[in-house]
Image (cartoon, rainbow, N blue to C red; front, top):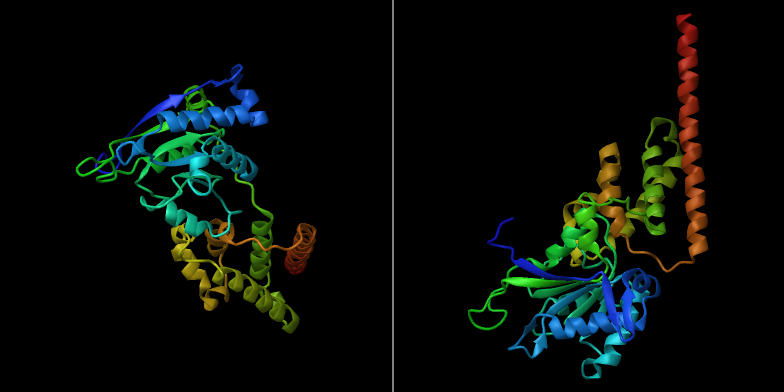
Length: 327
């Protein structure tokens, strides 16, 4: 760890969350996401969180929420508890939010609201906002690498954050879901495989078909025309990517590489892997009917299976002919 660029954290880790009526076990809290638990989390944050501007304002804070609905409820509860800040101090920042890039830019500006970003995956990794001084874990994390990446959102130093000559030297972590306890007992964590979205699976199916159709046996007018049509579709989706978006910027070299039409003339296995790893997860979901997209995916899967089966059958036939010639 390079201490020239990182700072230390202090933490509040709770196995039990105190409610008005005694102790609310964390397991119950996670299942019900009760208003009492949200009250406790937000009260702790506002009372114990690091503050700026001479203590008049809560410092920039990220609350890691379980899902979009959970995030909305946190913001709704905050607005109820602190009506003087209602309407902008705490905002949901995820892919469901309109103009989420503008929200991220505002959150990155120490002079603008929101002060509290309630994030669903969007701010977990890849975002450097030096002004962040409070991290609130309001969800379980079981991937060790992701957990430390999330903690990394608070590690950037920030000059003069607390006034002239008063730099950021540490940040706070509020852990309400036993994450530190989990990683003490399971040092390696549990690295689960990320689930591909329906949009990602559709895009990847098109990529696989494009690769199959470049083989010699498909160099006929109908196949060539269909392949070009698919290439036009995926290029249109890649060209829609906003290069100012922080996630896109992380993979910008691959975005530029595969925006080049000539790159699609002959895809290698490495190309396909790069597209799946660096491009597919960035594709913006269409607002089409889910059943229609599932039907399209089924059709593409059948097409791909037929193409691969035809290729295998041809290879088997060539092998049989070769064996007969040898015999």
